[in-house]
Amino acid sequence: MLKTPNELLQSRIRYQENRIIMRINRTLLLLLTIALLVTLTVSMVSAQMMEVPREDTVIFDVDGGNPTNPNPFNHNPFFGHSLGAAGGNVGTGQSVYEPLFILNYETGVIQPWLGESFVPDESLTVWTLTLRDGAYWQDGEAVTADDFVFTLQMLLDDDSRRLARAGDFQSWVSSVEKVDDLTAQVTLTRPNPRFQLDYFSVRIGGSFQMMPEHVWSMVENPFEFANFDLENGYPLGSGPYKMVSASENEFVYDRDDNWWGAASGTFPLPEPQRLIWVQTGNDDIRSLLTINNELDSVMDITLGAFEAIQAQNDNVIAWQAGMPFAWLDPCPRRISINHEVEPWGSADMRWALNHATSRNDVVRIAYEGTTIPSQSMFVEYGGLIDPYINRLAELGMTLNFDSDVAAAQALIEGAGYTLNDAGIYEKDGQELAIDIQTHEGFIEKRRIAENLVEQWRTAGIAATQTNVAGGTWNDNKALGNYEATGDWDQCGSVNEPWASMNRDNGVWYAPVGERVVGNNLMSRWQGEGNARYSELVDQIGVMPLGDPAILPLFEEAYEIWYNELVSLPITQAKKLIPFNTSYWEGWPTAENNFNHPATWWHSTHQIIQNLRKAGS
Image 1 (tube, rainbow, N blue to C red):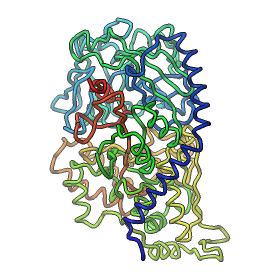
Image 2: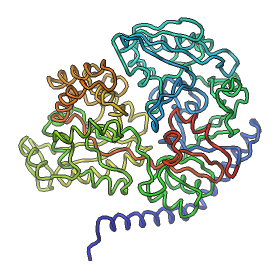
Image 3: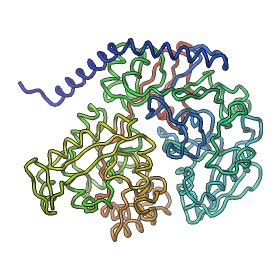
Image 4: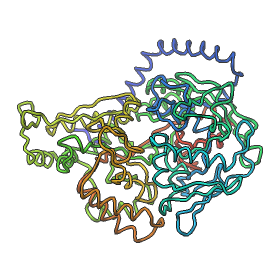
């Protein structure tokens, strides 16, 4: 008797769960050996650090972490991996540096943190920042407007535009100046109602991080500053934790009991005495560590791994108490297509890829049913569904969930290709081929690409998939050294459409070999369509949030984007991120939704504030 799709899915999940448990058992001896080595390492580190009991320590899994970090001793917050830094998701951005504001996804409110307010004038071109009174850096120096002005000016002066957000600020900011010790004024090049939301509020991932002027003003070249000297207190932030150790696979932070937030009464002193971020590398190791209560916060894992963990440790929870368990990240997954690599510069050929794609199959196989297919470029949060995504559906501009191979092949054959004996299309002796590059540290993206390769080859396209190191993957995206790549770089919009649409604005164009700014317009889309699209997006960009005049401009711009199918939206971004309550309670869930559960974001400060010892 044939099984239903749901029965097949459940069978696959049980099979995968059993495989994970078997792999855990087979590798237990190896992992015990590793654990012994870790114990020896901890013993050596403990000679230099105070000992902190496990029940006073929170252990976080590093997002997208390789088994080891190639750059553990560079903590320049304006660098990504491609510039040789450990990155902002190993604890510095979550505990040492503090954001000015934090957008609460659950309420839609921008909450003050190191900043008190940030307000525009009527023209939306002059923004005034007020900092909290009483804040100070970890060395006791006051946090002032001088620090804000210095940091922003450093980014404005970066001619290479390679420091984080330098290109964005150079596009928007005309000047910045100090008004008084707690006040600074930013003058923009044009009106921007989203200036605070986009760059200062941890809207997605991170945001502008203010640096201590009295330290960074002594740096001759920010590109040569590793910002790492534990004896002298670097990295130096204003947050409640100081880094005390760094290695290829572990980053340790101890609580600063003199933190300004607690001293001023603005915030309570966090309960955890120590925070550790560890590189786990894969689901097997994460699973074993979590089962054994050696991980408190686990990064994105498969459904099979999660259910295997829960079967052996019932203290492990997720955002949702039941299926699909996951939280929807605001960065939907897509396949970027390089328009300057033929024949993929043709909209018809991009549509052929789309018709050959079953988004439902990606959800069933790559995600085990823990997410939903994307019907547009946008994340499917309430503020975007109505009216924007619903309007696209009314206009017939949403994407198919199932494949139509015949339609794909008709477009390919219309471009002059014929099937060869191997079932692959070719023209002039060249097979129709495309390679999808994926980040080797993200199993989710690898599984998407693997599934699409199978689907596209069924349609007659010689598709392949290549896993590359994270730094190489980032460089290849920015420089255009790819045919297709699995990414999340349509990311931006949360409650309005402009931010995601602006990422394909022609203002960001750079030819292959030159670095695009902020991974915007990686497709290198050009032509009359892009020119008109960019004009419309620019008009939307200066309108107040919620202005009803946005909708007709949105419709016209999106129709251009849809007809040319600039990239391939695939799925909404599920994040199945378990939390272990054996030692710590108060983790964010759909029921305890004080904010979203993204522990790799700079809003993690709020999560740490909420943690309490289990049973207390």
